[in-house]
Length: 450
Image 1 (cartoon, rainbow, N blue to C red):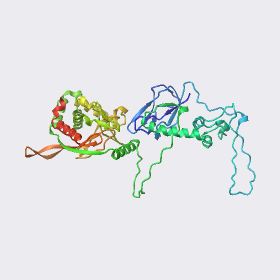
Image 2: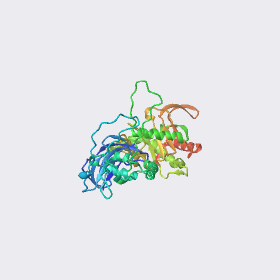
Image 3: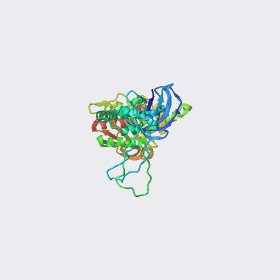
Image 4: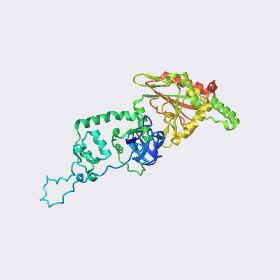
């Protein structure tokens, strides 16, 4: 039986994607596990594998098509040995009636319209009904009896337009609309199967039109279409600021001891030749945040209406800038990894993030986020929480500032860090406790080696 290859949901937030390119051509044999196509999601470009065997009979969505909805058919797979043949022509007795020759019409009347001549009904009881596969599927979903319809296609074949024009049974139509409405929310958050039987596929609604600007733009300008990633970033961060009660805690943290440790470790590693590593300040900040989360575990949490979720593992999401926006690859169990391991893993994740090659499990999840703009010279900023996480740390640039030590004026390398907190799960005192733990670790970085 023919099966539809559907646009899969490759992430919990995915509702549509771009079919970047097909890696299998029409007519080629497909086996389970073969890569069919590359799909660009809101986060990355991922390969879609076949789950059934057969022949790729038809590509329904060509390369480069954007805005393809989740669960929309993108190709047709036939079972091995099945023929993709069009229905045979109807017998001569069942051919469509030819339209009568036009005759002179009486004077036109305002209310009268000439009735179009229609082909004969497509079939009678017990006879085969000639209809396109799409017309059959839509008629089955709508509860329409095809035997009573007149086909407008070649040789009286019923096509989609005939089914659309046919009266819909009220109860069946209502049940179908109700079922589709009930399933739409589930489709948006659950991973869809790549292949689904053709008889079970549902037609997808057309994409809503983009909202027009509130006022006309009169100045010279260029319109840059929003990518899938940009639309998802806009929606999720707008929801975060509207629904999550943010509050912010800022502390100045001295970096001189941490910078000395970094310099010493890099100098020692340089002697190892090919096995050498080069630590960044961000690598040490990740490790310090992870250790602080282990010491103050209630910050490693999320809010739900039923309960506070306390995470067992310290999984830290790190914001990485990519051409279309940003993505947050995750350092799993960061508190249990050494600095060299964190550095190597972060470099690999960031490199693959920028070319869209991260796997879903490498950027989905995480219990805490870090956003570092220090490399751009930003002194201080406040980051927006990444739901459902409860907090995100914004890291500014390290710079030399005057400080007072023992009653004497001195100069130290200082960075300003701001913790954005979801007040529903983390109270002010708890957030301040975590910041104090983080500051103590950074200013005494030898504790990271324990």
